[in-house]
Image (cartoon, rainbow, N blue to C red):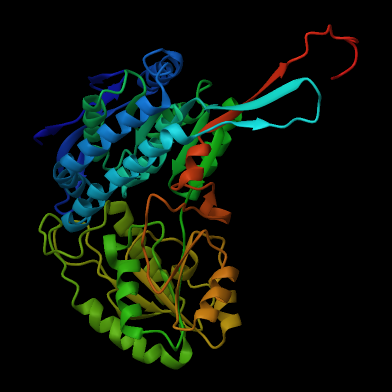
Length: 489
């Protein structure tokens, strides 16, 4: 193992309380040692962020100066994208053709929020009282604990870190203990950009002594979390101690709805992107295909043929289209769930097993669950390359089936009927709807979900407001003495 990563606390790189190995999913072998933050390191990171919040080096900066630091960070991210992509591919198994393009685009998120920094304006209120002037000051919410998973971690941290820094907050960023390498390397760019010590701190570690300590810390004012619903429930319970604001971007079981009038080949390609890109390891994965019954056979024949041509290979080779899962635990869970689904009546159209090669590879899998009540592959988020298929016969039935889940994160609708697209998109319960496309993002557009998929939005201008609070300032403009001190004015 030739790589040794460090924590970043109060402007300094340091070893953790211990180290742990990180495994390359393509080989199943450890490739780097990661630092483990425990209670002491987490407390020092939060204390540093708390000091930096009011220190003149950060708290005294103008909003425009904060924006310039974010612009500098964006340039550094763009320049370092090849190195960061290589680390992410080694650590997570995501293919290099995706990590390279995604990380380069992450720079645009920092540029977007750099431009917003000096546009988070207060306002004047024409109050209904004479001799009074009232205005709202918009101020940073405080110390932010940003907790992100291993998948798309540079993107998922940018949609938290960008608006938080634009608003003037300070941040303790916790990388997942599974594949934290890219964010620990990203800390070097934060340092090079010139952010004052304590403004951004990057740690990683395990639940009880890292995540729980961070989310319950009395000096944390907001927790921004992306991950699974079960961990989110722990975080919500932890914030009962500090009463921190919480935003949650959680999992999904997103419907991919194909109507008979759709451009079927385009929908096939989009379905491949929706569930088999990143080996299905995406919170917005379109894992439930709902297909109009009259075109089911034609669509599935095209889909199975296209899936057979997916190029499986080593993730660090540019021609590879499909790589391993991130962890062995994911692989074993998917094996078990698919087996149970088949026992419940689901039919394997392709895949359905681990691939016989080194690493944590599971075959792209399509399960026909038509007529199967509560097949496990339909009901649970697998976070892997498993597509379940069901049919509908009417628009109303398609909507009912799309909404028959506790999740509400994303949905795809494929139809050439514009009025239907409007009707269905309005009635499907999800925070993001893609029509005749899938898995598109932009820093200008908010995303997030409802129900078990969480609450709050990331991306867009409004996300920056979530990292601010308002202060009402009252100015009495009369020089006359206050007449009656016992009457509320």
